[in-house]
Amino acid sequence: MNIGAILFLLFSLFLGSFQTPVSEPVHVIDTESMEGVFGFTNADGTSIIVHGLGVGQEAAMSKWNKAIGESGKVLSVKYATYQKGNIDKSSGRDTSYNFENMAGYIFNVKEGSSTPNETYFLINENDFDLKALLPIKKTEDALKNDSLIAKEISAKKQRPITNIWQIAQFSDSQKLFLVKFKRQGDDMLFSLVLQREDKLLFNDFPAKTKDEISVWRVDDGGEVTPDMFSLLFAAKTSDGLALSIEWWGSEGENTFVIADDGEQFHELPISYYRYTYPT
Image (tube, rainbow, N blue to C red; front, side, top):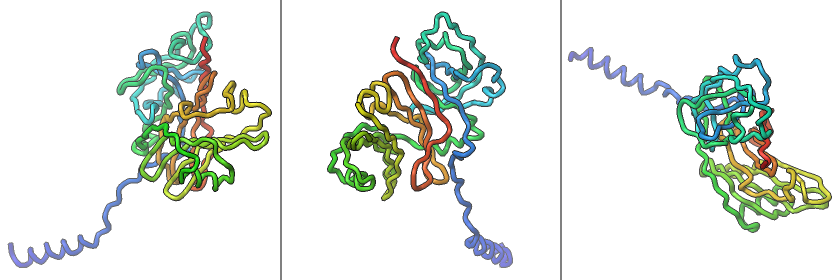
């Protein structure tokens, strides 16, 4: 190699040391444009039914190709057909036992395995960045009311706590708590509280009642416990997190999506209800 070539190589290496490094892509979901539909799996977990939408939506259904549920599990799905159902045999329950009698849009699970009778959120993978999903560690850890986090939450809300549980963890710095506060007259309150480093973000569920037979849900006895709640998914957004949460009651399951703006949670206009009262 001649002197000129050596000098050119050294000069190229010198210039390269000043080049701006290529940044890694940021994986987040856009909660303002997020679209999808809810459904649940059949008795062997091989199909999902999307119900309650009326007829004539086959074209819209065909774009959903992924399903997310069970703490962030992702399934590949494909729209198959519209099922007319059998109203004479139907129990009126939105369960896997009544799956074949229900009217709705049927999706076949192509990749992945699901648990029977589980709720899933169906999306298009081109519009929902699946790499934004976070691993979820489920817990049902009861904490003492004089624990540090309980004291911080009580002080922030300026209200005594009766029960507190950690129900999920997304990272070392992000934990989700279920907190029931002390009744004040007719006012009752529980909250889902996200601890993110030194911040506390609340999603409140206030209620007014004279008795405690049915406060937040039918026949709940004024109680909330961690076994009533589970997460379909947790995903990163440009501001923080989006969480899809299942809330079970005696008559059925409510599923909703909340997202935070860095300071507090707000509920998105995406929700679902399954009537599952035992026959």
